[in-house]
Length: 349
Length: 280
Ligand SMILES: Nc1ncnc2c1ncn2[C@@H]1O[C@H](COP(=O)(O)OP(=O)(O)OP(=O)(O)O)[C@@H](O)[C@H]1O
Ligand SMILES: [Mg+2]
Image (cartoon, rainbow over all chains, first blue to last red; front, side):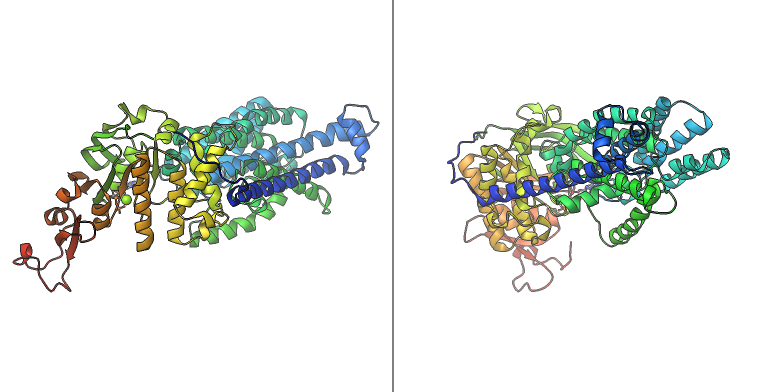
């Protein structure tokens, strides 16, 4: 197709408007990024002993700082990295599902995919006593199988609507009861471990737990980001997306596998941190506005939620609460609100 | 801009799941012409359009674009040749008109490519042609139905394809905007040779604007040809179960359908004067 047109006088309102919106989205995303960095730094500094930024920085660089090297380097750093990467993974995977299914309720933690991963992980750790790498593997397989089961149960001539959500919620409840059953049977297990698998927690973060997740995120997040333009076009419906050159089925498959795997790795490492996948996208949408991809903003928001909730859970109350308890308290009212709203009208992100 | 693209449906059967909606349909879209498809609700017009644009794989037969089965061609390449305005497209909440129309450029962009001058111009032009330039910064979901429809048409135009399929492009539009859109499509056809296939419900507008009129009934092609030949009282009766009188439109000379309902008909149609009044 030829594109020889007369050039117009340059600063058109169209261009100016688009530039303005892109700039404002970037500003908002940058703000989220700064907040994430701040909270990450805070989680390294704050604890029973406070270490200043200087000391923390030297530990991060690998220098030997008496006291700080152990507390910050061995205890706080893996925990903070876990919060950062698990939060980002949940956020990006959540918004991917919500965008793809055009429904804010369709996040993996609502429709049972996280529950699948966590049920497999609990069975792996508590019953079969397998090692961490295998736990991740089991979680991924279980999450994919759960996604497939939900898809097959909900599929009817390519229409995936409210039915998928309802089936997913049912499956989530079933799998959650598997988790509860296994944990109750394993009476010797302490409350911390139980909490990790019931609501998600960063307690007990070690490099052995964190590294598989970091590697997975380094591969899977770019894979998702590469699909973000296609995913955005899918929001217009399969017909429009396909007419605009999107390979609908292939995009959907790629994106589902990558997002489910991310959820599985994050869940294997930190448990099913309640509502982060569900909340990150809608919050990110409010912060950055519509019209562009929400993947990066949602990843940042997810990290922000987990880091903030963990800091709050550790230091704000008399007792220490695992991160999932805090995010659960935040997310539940929003879930109720959405259920009420979508009952009235078909909602989208 | 050529009129050399050929689009042919060869004995296609189309359906959803086990349900067959269209059976053994043959259609040759005349290149560089305007084709209008008319037919009753649920007769399979949208389904046919979806098959032509490769959204729906035929259970039998095939759709052939430029000599090759459309389903074997890469989606993106097809999207640079053929655009589609679906009957009810969706917009994500809050998206601005300019950003929506810009998405029409997707098939022309590579994965990491930047927004090019050609993209900018295509969008500007599409906005101008559809009279939506003033709406660029508005959110799509805050527009009136007619404004929104014109924005969707702008998105399809920004795609700059040589074949354009439109499913009821004039729904929601007032009479003035209906004519404007049809005139605009005709301009596009006359100046660039864009092949246009559109589903229309208004028989008179279809007859006036189409070079080639296709009447569908129950998933089959009942008649296809010049509007003068296709749009007869007999066809209208067969397709819609409606009695009518067809006269020459004094404005265009094309056939014009005057429906005969059970009320307000002072001069009964001579052909049906003997028939008892009934709905079908
Ligand atoms: N996604 C779908 N799944 C199942 N059946 C469908 C689907 N889309 C359409 N149908 C059915 O196929 C038949 C033809 O539908 P189609 O949309 O092609 O009709 P149409 O001629 O465009 O009608 P209208 O004038 O109302 O737009 C209808 O009976 C409809 O119920
Ligand atoms: Mg239709």
